[in-house]
Image 1 (spheres, rainbow, N blue to C red):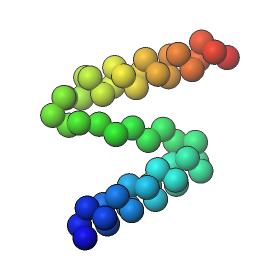
Image 2 (image 1 turned 90 degrees about the vertical axis):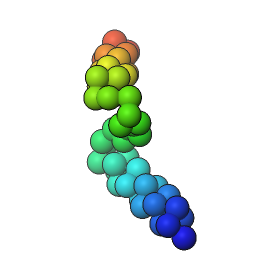
Image 3 (image 1 turned 180 degrees about the horizontal axis):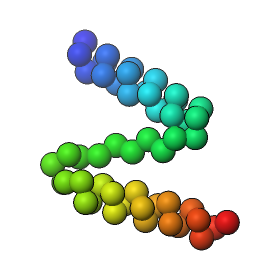
Image 4 (image 1 turned 90 degrees about the horizontal axis):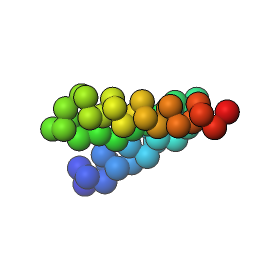
Length: 51
């Protein structure tokens, strides 16, 4: 029941982020902030180069 509710909430959050063009990034907090930020910035940089 708990996992089902978490999954439903996550899907609703992803949908709402998509509606407002907000990047939704799932991250493992055990990897630290640097790894998450680096991956996000690399993705954004690649998108900017496509323009």
